[in-house]
Length: 294
Image (cartoon, rainbow, N blue to C red; front, side):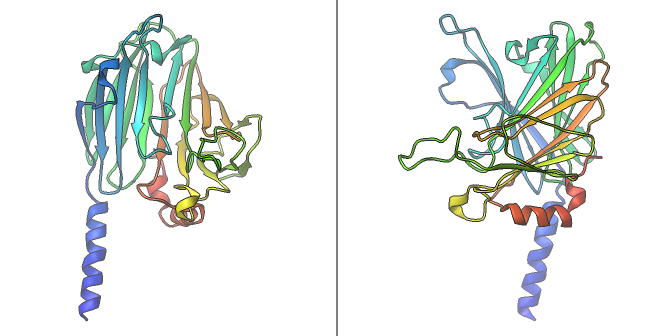
């Protein structure tokens, strides 16, 4: 009876923590070698299941090198981490890296039990809002991009790129990083299984989610990496989606948006602890609603 009671209380505690409404906080970011940066601001977004830190930085000019803006998603050294610049956007030929962020560009956002932040982006008059947030019922970092109401320039081209370091950055026998020729990348979608190759895969509207994983570094043991990550997509407003599953340390998804798109929605997920390819597949079947856009 005592063991049953302890087990019941433990299960209740887990359920309670999973039901915590999402929250977000904004603060100055602490970065390595802060003297190199003119701007560094972060938003922590969290609930009872997961936590993400979204950071915007701009480097100072150094010699002939111009200032450069980057968007980071803090994480262990895999997944959508600062190592890979997880999100990039180019509008009318202007890169996000050339934007000049201000403190007022990032604001906290909350609606019901969901919370996160919104970032204003101004591509020389073509203005957009990037929203990142969490729901109460999901470990996923959800996001959307939409044109701002005060935008004054037409959109001729809009491109987005997501990049992930799947499972681990492997090392060779001499403990040197393996940047290429050492991986077995894969992607599982609801419609098909994609395997590693040099040329890009063109995604279809049936590919509504991408479980990015590695066959060799499958997360099944401590020396097998951290396991898969996931991108969830709403293809509405997407003109073309190319997935690059090359034998390289990063996996990249490149999206071209339609000129008249109203909103692009997505989700990014990575585990808080190591998970195997097989265990994630079971979780996705058991907890499908947690990984579903709504």
